[in-house]
Image 1 (tube, rainbow, N blue to C red):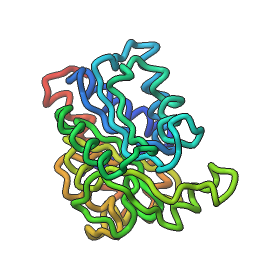
Image 2: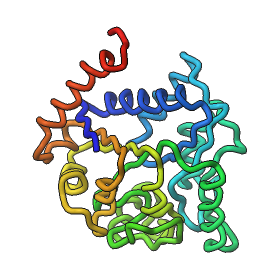
Image 3: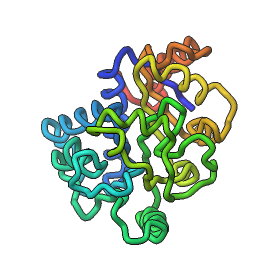
Image 4: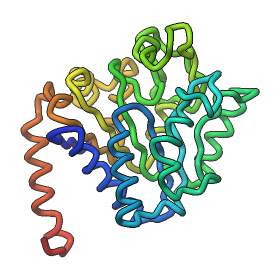
Length: 266
């Protein structure tokens, strides 16, 4: 696991976009796993800018989103499909047929979840998965106690998650109680994972996920088992990391040495 401590949210966005752009240049038909929430918005804005100003191409890309509320139609202003359309999809040239977001109005949620897993496999698996992290350490909607081998499924949201999301709705009663979510096991099958976090409210849980024990009570801690994870946090979110100085040293060494090791000039 590589941990990068950026100065602020804008630098997180730039570093994350660099990694995603590098992935697309290496493999134009990459399969991207996407996340919603406030944290990745800056990264999406940076990707949109690079698409419009530099021609970053998404025409061969396939996408799979992590999750969606059950009961909200795709046109609802708080659905994750609507979020993705507004914050990314309608601004880039990804083919609509290549976009996959869980469907919260499925007649059979169980059948849909099985189909979603098969679609990911049919696409060749996820090359790069973007993640945020909840204040209780959940990734996607894998709440504390979720199996670390779980697959895409229906998940009951915790009271804390419902309260956190209530600010986006007119009342607490309107917040969905269920979601379709990729499982932890599904996420861990991605070839590369990019976890983003910012703000002091994430500092404790970032420290637990990165440096604490692997436990289903902090599902993000399962990322310690993955062979290729990059965690990008700002100074506030990284404030409680015990090995922060080491992470900074490693990042600075890699930036200095990698061009030389690859035979590239600065």
